[in-house]
Amino acid sequence: GAVVSQHPSWVICKSGTSVKIECRSLDFQATTMFWYRQFPKQSLMLMATSNEGSKATYEQGVEKDKFLINHASLTLSTLTVTSAHPEDSSFYICSATKGQRTDTQYFGPGTRLTVL
Amino acid sequence: QQQVKQSPQSLIVQKGGISIINCAYENTAFDYFPWYQQFPGKGPALLIAIRPDVSEKEEGRFTISFNKSAKQFSLHIMDSQPGDSATYFCAASGTTGANNLFFGTGTRLTVIP
Image 1 (tube, rainbow over the protein chains, first blue to last red):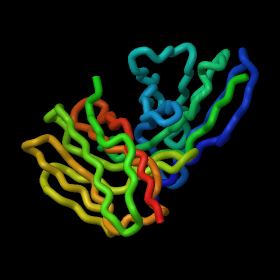
Image 2 (cartoon, each protein chain N blue to C red; image 1 turned 45 degrees about the horizontal axis):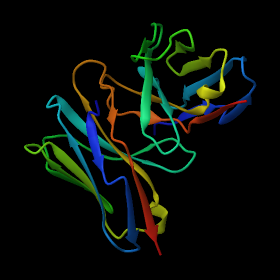
Image 3 (tube, chains in turn orange, red; image 1 turned 180 degrees about the vertical axis):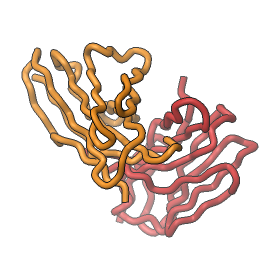
């Protein structure tokens, strides 16, 4: 199998606070992890790609200082939304790949972030 | 620029019918074409995938048809069931670079009893 978990599954926070979302590959070592953002009834938007021990590669238009990504081990990546604002409210989904090819991505269940 | 174009945006099918979702791409470097199924509030789940060396792949009630010359691929769901009601995303990636997946815009499928 290839199971990816996310924690928390949902979080509500006040504007100005920071929120950390964890992404774990439970039964495999992930060579690469991806972070996506999804708005209601829309497709997935890639935010960044991360490899263990390396700095994340952010997509154009994604603020690095706003969305901090740490890939501490082969099974854990974290996304921290710093100084969150209501416009950051969204569904955040991570995915992980195993092996050399990174095209087969296994997705986590997502984290619903609501910023009040 | 949308790398993968998907249609229709929404689809309603009677139980037992065939659901067909189409996707088209431009980048000839793409060589991996997966389909994902997503239920509300959940992450996408890999449903079936195909590579360009075959024109069709079947897994149970799900079939991918691939037309390399037309740069199109489609998902067919046979004997559609109410439990198939979900949003389906096609995607594509290539062998170079970061192998990022480029997603289609999604199709909301509703199967009515």
